[in-house]
Length: 297
Image (cartoon, rainbow, N blue to C red; front, side, top):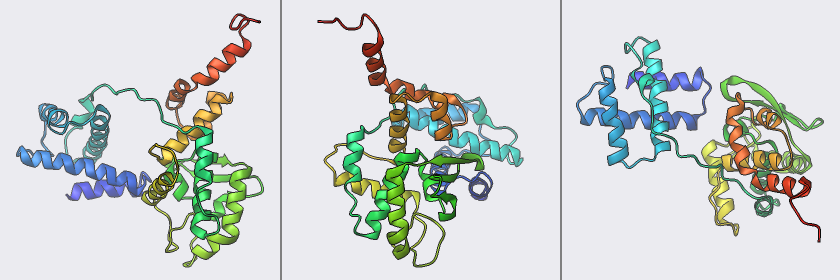
C-alpha cells in the first residue's frame, strides 16, 4: 500500500486535487487491489489480459454502468502512469485499455423558478442560514466547482469590482464575477454570520458550525437538506447548479466561448455539451425570426 499512499500524496500536494477527488481515486484503486487478491495477481506484474477479466468482473458481476467503469479505468490509468514514472512498473498497461462507450447523458439543471424556491429556504436570521443562502447564490452566480467554492478565502474577494480570484484545476487562476443578489448575500454574511461562525479566526469564507473550513462533503450535505425542505422532486448537487449557470447563460444568448472562460474549461469541447440543452432558446429564436415559421392571422 506504500505506492498507493505515495500516489495519493502526489494527487493532493503536487496536482492540487481536492480531498474528495483523492478519496474517489483511493476507493477505485482499493477495489482493484481486492480483485487482484481474489485472483492471486500482483499489481506490479499484471498484463492486458488480466485487465480484460477485470472489466468483465465490473460489468457482469458488479453490474457497473459504463460511466462508472470508465471512471475506474481513468483512476487506474492515472495510478499506473504514476507507477511507471516512479519505475515501480515497466509500462502503464492501462494506457492500452479502452473503456465501454459512454452513455450520453445531458447535464441536469434547474429551471430558474426552481432555483428561486431554493433561494427562499435558508433562514437568514441565523449565521448558518446566511452562509447557506450565500452558498447557493455564489454557486449559481459564478458557476464555480464545489472544490473552488470551499477554497475561497475572504482576501480573494473584491467587493468593489464584484469579482473573486479562483484557484481552479491544475493550479490555474481565473477571476469570476458575481451579481447583485450574490453581493447582497455576501455582504450580509460577512457583516454578521461570518463573524459569529469565525471563532478560530480563519481566512476561509465558508465555515462550518465549528468555525472550520467547510468541506466539499459538507456542501453536498447542506444542499441535500435544502432540497428536502423544498417542493422539488429532484436530487441536487453543486455540479447541477453549475450546469444551470451554463445553460441559463446560453439560453439567454451568451456565446459558447464566453461560457467556456466563465466555467474555467481548458477546452471548448467540455463546454459544447451544454449546446444540447438549449433547445427552448433555439425554438424561441426560430419562431420569432424565421419569416415562414408562423402564419399571420
